[in-house]
Length: 269
Length: 269
Image (cartoon, rainbow over all chains, first blue to last red; front, side, top):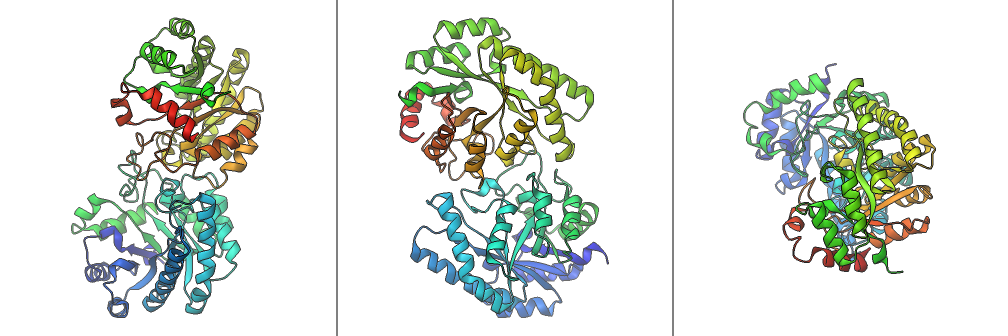
């Protein structure tokens, strides 16, 4: 089987495209999977799901649930309710995974915020189990600790998954977020059986920005193949999402982006 | 004793100032310590040392040695030779600590680059021991892994210090680099007896940039006092360096910067 059969196109890699365009382009290019963002669903998940299915694509994951670390109990309840909705949406889309980005400290201490993440995950776990959707806990790079995620290492994600102790609790390995970690190989091995997704992009030197700095595979320093082989060695053989936030790529998306991705994917991942 | 008696002004916090200006201003403001950068010494370390002493200041550390992770053996030898020179300069300045920034992967794998860091440290350790200068291994934030330092966690710095097993091997705790780490408290405790320096600044939200994004203490989200108390609890009672890279602060340095730092230091550290 060609590795291309595992390629998933995360739709934020071409933000200017509508969902319809993205699905059409992936279908035309023979890309089998798509990674979906909730804010791109246009309010009608059933309709979006039917359209994706009609084009023969499968959804690798829905992005994103989480953001549990709100400072007030009321806000935390709202976040949990929204996560339940996200689980339903994932199920409607046939997405096996809801990607969980934990959220920032939000005025709390890191310890308190981290405790609210576990609480939030425990609250929605029964919904995920019932819906057959895996909660994919994604550690973000430590440079996002203040603004996006108090979960910043794969060790933490594994610890959380241990505490949830459910087949509906998994972890996401995104190379951009974890490549620097001296423990990454041992934590990938520790994640055996619970890897719910593998995301690729690259880390360019110099990094042009914090949010929009990701590069195309091969344009950076991440040992992509080594990490992919480590993930595969745990038995993971599911989709590999290409998720690149980069305005230059957005601007030139209409100029053969998907073919470029397929080439780079084969050459570097 | 007031905490102000432990304040050290790292001279890069006011890059536009010459060494003479910085020493004069610190002396006038009653700041007892200064953190020195090698490229600011102007080629005559003895003269600089005498001038600093004349003004009654003490040098808390010399920045920086390290950068061991060169891709060729010849280049690595040059780096080691330069580090020996840095140890001598630290001794001449009466600086008890040479800050070690390990260097980036530089085209090598992270594992190989990390091995060259240990080799480099082992090579210069006898010089440091003889000179009475502690090698302060400073982990940098993981966002610098590609460009500045393959040592990115306090755990790694502690591991290296364990391997060196010498009273001349210490670690530097810089809050900007380690605050996000779920293990930071336990690794600070593990560093008991080998903490060679404590550096403060803050992490603003949003972070305006990768290199120049640091903020004045109190203008960010780092739990400064908690970290300082954890460091103190290990028995460290040495200087606390204020090291902020921020162009806005550089531009307004002449407008009461040292008094502002003293106020913020007392209020937040």
